[in-house]
Length: 462
Image (tube, rainbow, N blue to C red; front, side):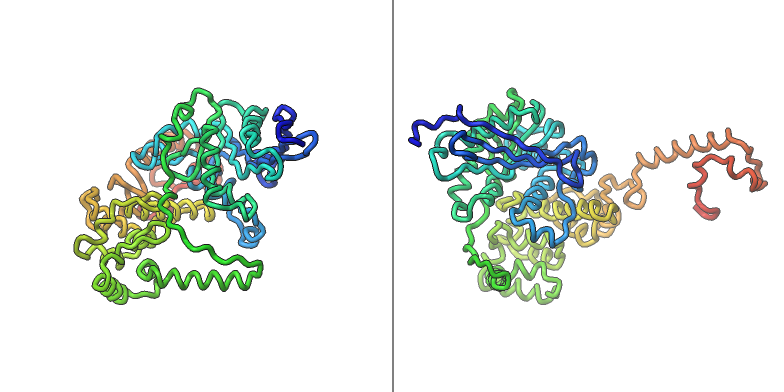
């Protein structure tokens, strides 16, 4: 068929939506096929539809479930990892957009996205592939597929679509997974009015025609933090799992040799004295190595903050200027975080993971609180006039007002408890049997007591 005879008007979009087992109301898998009457299927788009209302407060449990290692091995297309990365990067456990992405002076990027993303359906696009052979690549088939998706019965103006070029490229054939293809995919999404949320790798599209993101030009959109990732050598490919493991182990050895301080800072087997010796030797032989950035843009101080390595942080901050102290405010890494934010983000991640998997949070580890304290002092942030021990004791459960009892019972909560107990007392006094001072309540009347007395503590000192 001559190229000139191909027309999108001859094509038809067929959409198949399948509720996902386990959470059929919250998650639905979508496949859009672009069909040509003579050439058959010429393009496919895959996505997952996320119903936030059905997720409720289980957003992370639904979109980033705890998965057995064996299931991850079977997830050859990386769909589980993609969805987990998307949901945990952009949203908190309740499914609300992370505050720093809309309020922080740096992390918000252009600031075109706000809390409107907390409403409506979200379509996370995994892949969009157009058949390589035939007159389709330059005919706008991919853009047409997006238009058909957004105009379908499954969407309304309050909804959003999210895509990530660096992850979509992994669904291309191996030979097509190039940096040039990733750049082309990024340009394609921008041409279709997807705009970056914050400085993340994710691009968002609003189905509301008047949304301010549609007025932002491609040139004015924020850069992704991934621009700070350094190119690395491609690992040799092999289909033999044993050989693949050997290649990975060799790569880890080379990485350790290239970045010895990065590894030592987080190695629990390295003693503080050994760490001091290593830092002193590196600083004497090559002062720049103390501030070297790995392939993700992290300095040893960033890595030490991520691991809450107190000895490493103290030793690095004690070096003369220009030294690691000059790196405290730098954000030129793949997460766009300075040293303090690197520590705080790890604290937040650990808390969310513990709450999701265990259903209970045991508080911030002492090492991270001490790390946070040291870094706040280093950058001149307020620590509430507390010394390190007091700070660690009051912040264990996230207190920032220094007025919480035992670090977790806030003044507001104490006021509510007093009000509740006063109400319960009045309720108890109005119930039968009457309480007589100094006399026990007859055992036969126990069933008449209000249910709230079940929670009264045993007699003894309060």
